[in-house]
Structure formats: structure tokens, C-alpha cells
Image 1 (cartoon, rainbow, N blue to C red):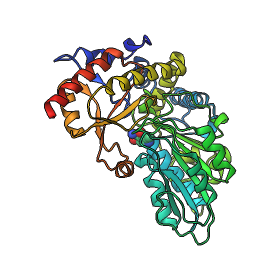
Image 2: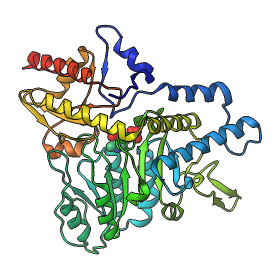
Image 3: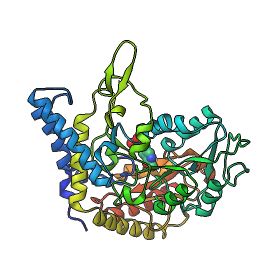
Image 4: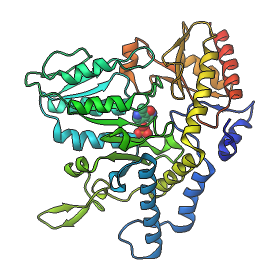
Amino acid sequence: MLNIRGDFPIIERLASSANGGIVYLDNAATTQKPKAVIDALNDYYLSFNANVHRGVHRLSVLATEKYEEARVVVQKFLNARESAEIIFTRGTTEAINLVAQCYGGLVVDKGDKVIVTVAEHHSNFVPWQQLCLRQRAEFAVLPVDRQGALDISLLEDELRKGSDTNAGISSGADRSSGRGAKILAIAHIHNVTGAIMPLQEIIALAHRYGAVVLVDGAQGAAHTATDLQQLDCDFYTFSGHKAYAAMGIGVLYGKRELLEAMQPYQFGGEMISEVSVERTTFNELPYKFEAGTPSVADALTLSASLRYLQKTGLDKIAAYEQQLTRYAYSELQKIEGIEFYSPPASSSIISFNIRGISHYDIGVLLDKQGIAVRTGHHCAEPLMHYFGINGTVRISFAPYNTIQEIDKFITALKKACQMLS
Ligand code: PMP
């Protein structure tokens, strides 16, 4: 076990709260925060709150230094080539929308294709669907199996096909011009199934067919070490709040040459170089995409959380989360009527239903017993339609969870099933 529970003040507080405490198993929605992150937030507002860039006074200089230092921490965490390739956003959603607007709008034309999988979160689905509708491009949606695995040969078929009818669940196609796939947008780890995508293979394949790859790392960054240079990823996005930092901060990584080619989609302070009545020139990277006052305090919490993850060791975290996940899966397997939508060795996420019982009712009865899980469609309605269900129960782990907490959850689940069947 990782000896880090004490680093998270809220975890102990939840455990000792009224009626036997609360076990938090909703970490894929958002993680709890270690003291180091809360201290970073406090420190900024207690000691050196000031707006960044342009200020000559010492507080502004200090805030700017810390803010830019946070960018370097993110760069090193992801092993990006340079910190100018790291753009701060509000989160994954904003980062993907930025790419869909500014890169998608630039390269996707009538008859081109954007590929996603049916397991994408709405944040990595709707922006591409809307882009394709706008541009009259083909929106190709690849299936996954019941455990979330992607058949790479179907991806290759889809990449290869320029003008043919495809094997996926495509819509809105105008394939007459057959110009092929311009963008593949895929999660690092899917938020319903927890299935880990073989990114190295997927990215190399997409590049072979000339497609640019955006990876939605919302469920990836805090659970597995990510080396963007090794992956040769074109765009990577993640949210701070799912990686132990505050809400309101996220990251878009993009290769310099792609970011350089893109026009900004928000205009205002910070992102300009010169403005006259007639014209405006834009600032250099990364500021071109950071219009207005940024979330400085939240960026500093991200800096603190990523340092915390590095200090703890992402490999150790991943190994421990795997241990928890395998244990929970094997205990769940013993429950009558269980239907899994995750592989046995997913990354820290298990989705399931109990035959004949509503996921919502299970969630409510678990809550009454102090177990916090998520139920519903998990912002992945296309996957729910594809599986022919309207939701699942989802448990998701963080390194502060324990085997004892899983035992509590299993006992509570059995009780809920008894009451509901
Ligand atoms: N993608 C995935 C895979 C997610 O799990 C989530 C959050 N549930 C998002 C995107 C969106 O993240 P955010 O709401 O932080 O922008």
C-alpha cells in the first residue's frame, strides 16, 4: 500500500464523518486534493496575489515567475519538447474545443474525415461531430468491444478508406471527394470502460495515413506516466482537477508547428503583439491561445499536484491502482447477475450493472451506506446506445483508496442488491 492517505486531509475527514464515514470511489469524476495543493492555493492568495505578465511591481513579477514555472512543470511531466507547447486552458473540454475550432476548422474540409471511437466522452465527441456537420465532412465512429477494447484493424480500414463506405458507425458523410482522414481523436483511457488505448501503435498507424492525433488524456495523465515525445502525439489534453489539482485549470499540449499554423479563437489581452485601429498581430506561443487573465492560482495548484505525483512516483501509483482494480473486479465477479463493461485489468475504473436492478437505485442505496460512486451515462451516451443500456455503476480509484474500502463497498453493494431484488 502507498502510505499517502495522510497527505489528503479530506479523506480522513470523510472517513470519520457521521454514520460510519464516507468511502470516496468517484475519482474519475474528480480527485481529492493533497495538502500540498491546498497550500499552493492558500500561499498564492495569502502571499503574492497579483496579475501576471506586464507588471513591473514585485508581486506581479513573482506571480509571473511561478505561473511560468508551472508551465515548465507540466512540460517536464509530459516530456514535451518545450514549454511554449503547453497552453493553459480551463480543462480538457476547453482544450479539445480549441483544437476542433482552430485546427479542425483549418484542415477539415468537405469530404474529409474525422475519426473517433464510440467510447469517447462527449467532450471528445461533440466538438468533432459539430465540426464535421459544419464542414460537411465525414464523422467516422469506431466501435469498441464490451470491455472497451478497440480493434486496430478497423481503425486501419477507416484510415485507409478515402472514399469507400466504411465499416464503422459513420454519419453525415459526403464521401464523393474521398480526401481521407485528417484527424483521429481518441482517449488515452476511456472514462466508462477504463480501457487503456495502445497509443503508441494507434498514433504510428494514424501518422502512416497522414492523420493528426489528438489524445484526450483526462483519465490518463494522473494514472500512467506519459511521454509525449516518445508517443509522437500531436495534441494531448488533460484536466487539473482529475490530477489532484484545483478545478478551473487544464492543459493543451500541441506540437509547435501545428500551434503556429492555427489562428487563435479568443481575442483580448495577453494574446496580442500589437493592436492598431486597422489591424492586430498576435503574440507568440503559448500566449496566442491564452486570452485574458489566466487562472494563476489554479495553475499553481497544478504545479503542486504534478510535483506531488512525481514525488510519489507515477509507476508506483499505477501499480497500486491496478492492485485495487483487480481486487475489486474479482470480488465483484462473485456477485450474482454482474455484467461488466470494463476489462479485469483496466486502469482504476470499473463499470458494471447488476441484471434486473437499476444503476441509479444502486447508487442511491450505496450512498445511504456511505459509499460514493457514480451512476448514469457518464457523458458517453453514444457508448450507452451502442451497448443498449441507459447507464452503469462506475467505481474509480485513487492511490488513497484501500482494500478495506473495497470490502466495505462490496458489503454495501450486496446489501443494496438484496433490498432491490
Ligand atoms: N474526457 C474524459 C475521458 C473525461 O473523463 C472527462 C471528464 N469526465 C472529460 C473529457 C472532460 O473533462 P473536464 O470536464 O474536466 O473538461
